Length: 139
Image 1 (tube, helix red, strand yellow):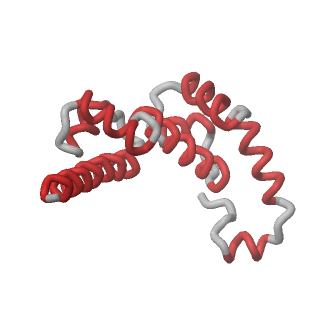
Image 2 (image 1 turned 135 degrees about the horizontal axis):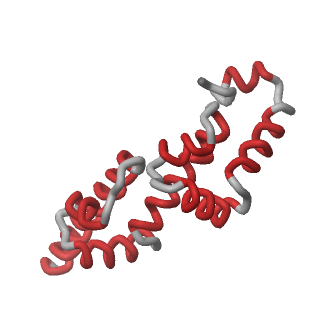
């Protein structure tokens, strides 16, 4: 019985470390992160961390980072008047080509087309509602 309790305690400690690493990715998605840097946040070796992260979250740290960057890019494209190039660099990509390719793969459309489609759908909503809910364009 004591072994099970110790294993469960160890498991929750590892899960807490993995969550700390995931929070680090969320906070620093715009920086050039690598597996070594992320695994240090969990105090685990890179390969052990990679295996445990995949088991815990059903995705790799790199996939999670890319998904986080694409989500933030979608938000910026909807809400700010930044060029697609500026959005690309703002979310941590080093190349406009790789950003556009990944964005199209994940979202199903090019960033500029996504922005136009989102702006068209926002134009059908009363401006007062957009303003009250913080959905309008911001500088």
